Length: 123
Image 1 (cartoon, rainbow, N blue to C red):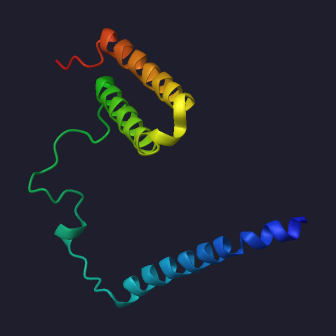
Image 2 (tube, helix red, strand yellow):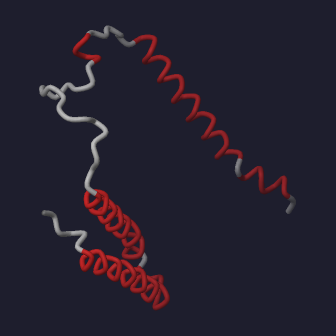
Image 3 (cartoon, rainbow, N blue to C red):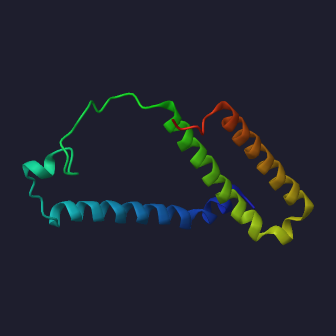
């Protein structure tokens, strides 16, 4: 089995990428050409929420906001990694169980560390 045989296995993937890219670009161009383009002052204004802008858009944001966002992403990814483990629980055996428990232990230690540092205290 040579290298040519291995590359032939990836040809459908290459075709999928080419067709998906071409279709995506064609739809964007078609939307730009066929869609209405009637800009007006209010539509082009940066804020359409009904309020006049206040403050500077480059103001400093409290670091705790980012810590909460990182915690959210961390636990969101934890769930994303635990779903496949839960679905294959019967087939992974003791090695899979121990691996998942080590993963959960590391996340729990990180969560306790953030809790003790006061990242979850919002004043």
